[in-house]
Image (cartoon, rainbow, N blue to C red; front, top):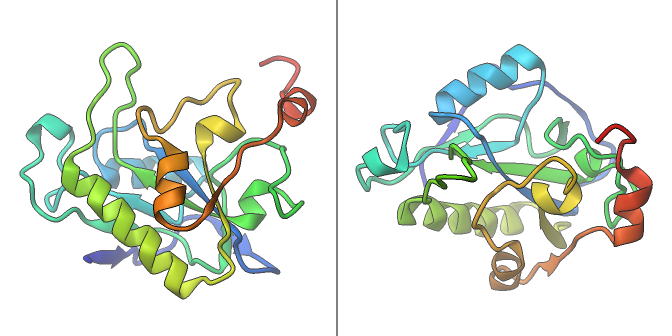
Length: 187
């Protein structure tokens, strides 16, 4: 699996306890590289971004079928900044503090959804399998849409519960009461 570690990590903090949760996202941007540049500019981060292919194509329609690049953007042992929800994780702490954020490069247009290349989804499976080996504390998987449903839908057309089952992880989403309690008043 081609993992490219960034020369300079995206923003992160030390994490006191190992991650227990994987949160799946989509970038809502063109290339993985342009998303990294954007994140750096706004002070946010994922642990990993999976490009559409080996040349980091800007659209799935232009993907060449090559093995996607996986960009390692923040240390696994660190707290990255990828979820804006105050809903507590299943471990009881903030989601960012308890999770590893993995994002798929994808435009995320609801009116004209972009498909995910087969190789990109296969790379997601490979990465999750590798993370399960390296971070044995991982127990749960969720999506950005599940933990922040009032203003996030990513990753569109990815069924997190099926991916969780495939990797022997428990699917997790907050209860409706937790969502009500933590939804910002202006959202």
